[in-house]
Structures are given as structure tokens and as C-alpha cells.
Length: 442
Image (cartoon, rainbow, N blue to C red):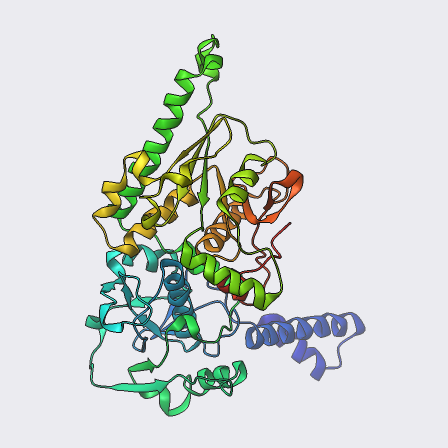
């Protein structure tokens, strides 16, 4: 302030050139500081900083407000279908709430697998599958879940009808989100979206934003422990195989033993799947969707660099457990196991379909090698999470000795093996993961 005063005084008294140049520099610096303060908001970091009734959030696309209001909520329809369809639907509901600068009221998932009989869907609360507090902690400043007990007045609800049909375009859907994010709509404590399942809503968000939500989904401890038991049993089979191996018996240095890796194969050979995939192949004019049991076994056996013996865990539908043919025909050195042969089918039988799928998902996610079908949502989300882990580790996703490798058996790769599979995290929507693709390679 003293410098500015002296500059002003120098101007009035006709100060010299040197003083004049100094003053010009000072005035320019002050002008730049004022301009920066006006144009650049303070950076709060990813965790978020509360400003009165708001929490500042990063501006991923699309988001029309300045933050997630702590007193405004969004309610969505019950989330239905398979586990991974439900995870995608949940993430889409999260992004819709975030776009509207609202907290997502904790939705109901569906414990059973029924597509048409709505009354048989068996609602199950989100926090009976995933950790509620953990989700909010991991996704703090990005998206937020709330409980109905957080509402001050449950009667102040505005219904928002989701459009449908060909005339309801992506642009119209986005315009609706914009409209309901401002003006008189902001006065309502709760906006309730009515209409179709969130999985069928138009998609406006990039893959990386979905990946962030998926990272925040942590199974409750009970389900996590059940997955631990299944993985421990697979590892135990591997140790038993090693101890019975002649090469291990001849090895003098036991400290050099390496745990036997296990391969998880999401084996889609059910009759209903084969009918669906054949129709899909005809519609898309391709032969890279359906795979027979024989083709799957051959391609797994031809994975380059895969050493034997190897334990192969088969993630198959329960109705296939009565048919032992999925365990037959594997090449020597490959030791196939499914729930029943592994002796863990009792773990799964205690739970409804959704929890069974969650356990199998975790078992496949933790596998040393994963092999699935690139037109399966279950397989696709596993590969997305494994790709995200590789990126976090900072290693080359397409390297020869990459950790957490994944493959698609429905697409032929090197040496008649399955194609290497990584998720393209730069895609602007989740379309290919939701509905499948054969563009999967590095």
C-alpha cells in the first residue's frame, strides 16, 4: 500500500522515469492479481470443502451446478436385473444425481433375477450388499448417498418422468436434466424420477467417471469374508497340487516356491445365453460372440506364457453344476473346478442370486488371470476394474508380463489363444461395456 501511495504521489508531482517505470510495474501486478481472483476459483482438492450449504466438486462432464447441495435429494426407481446391470444402473443414478447437484437417496437393489415379474424382484437395500459409509468416504466430493431419515419433509416430492421411445433422444434427456437443475425445481427437497430402470437411461458420462463410482463400491464384511473363503480354497487346491508335483518334490530350496496361480473363467455356455448370442451374432453380422465349451477350453490352454499345472476356476451358472461336462475335456495340466467340486457350493446356497454373483465377481476379480466373454456385462466390468488396477500401478497395460492380465475367449488372439483384453478408459460413454464389443485389444 505504501508503494502504491508513493506512486500516486509521484504522478502528482511529476516524478522521474525510473519511478514511473516502477509504478507501472506495480499497477500491472495489482491488476493481474485482481483479475486472477475474479476468474480463478480456489482449488479445494478432490475431497471437497464445505461452503455454507454446498460442497464444491470437480467439474467432470456434464455437471451444471456449482456443487452437491446438502439439503436436496434425488430418488430413483428400484434397480433391477443382473448384478452388473445393477451396478451400472446404480452408477448412472449417481451421475444423474451429481449432474443435478443432489444427494442420491440410497436405492433398493434386487436380490433375485426376474426380468418381467416385478412383484418377484425381492428388493434388497444397498447397504446389505455394499458398505454405505465406505462408499461416501471413498467418493467424497464426487457423488454422495443419503438416507430417507436425512429428509426434513418427505411430502415435498416432485416427480420427474423419464421419457422413452425413439423420440426421447440423448439431447432431450440432457435438456431435461438441465431444466430440473435450476429455477423453481431447485426449491423441492426431493425429486423422484419415475419410469424405466436406470440401466436404460441415456448415458452422458465417460468411462473414467463410472470407474470412479465402481471403485467406491466395497462389499460388506460378511460377503467379503465369504469371497475370502472361496479364494482360500482355490489357493489351497493349488498348494496341494504343488506338494504332489514331482518337480516340487525334487526341489531342494523350498524358499523358491511360488504360489500356484489360478485362472478364473467366466464360462457362458448356458442354453439361454447361446440362444441370445446367436441372435446377436446375426444382428451384428459377426461370429465373435458365441463360444462353445470346446473353443473356450482350447483358447485357455493356448494362453501364451501360462504355465502348468494351473487351477482353473469356472464361474458358471448354478444350473450347470449338475452337469459335470464343464469339467471334462481339459488338457493335461489344467485342473478345472467349479463351486461343487471345490466344496464351496454351500457358501453360495445361503444367499440369494445377487449375493452369489457378488461373491463370484470378487473371486474372478482377484484371479491371477481372468478369461471372459467381451459381450458379457459381468466379464466387462471385471476387466474394467482390473484395467483400473493396472493403471493405478503405473505399469504398461500391454506389456508381455503385465500383472492382472485379462483375455476374451470369444475373440481369437495370438497362437489360437484368447485375445488380450483391456478397457479403453477414454471412451465418452459406457456403451461398449454395457452391451459388448469386439474392439478390446491394446
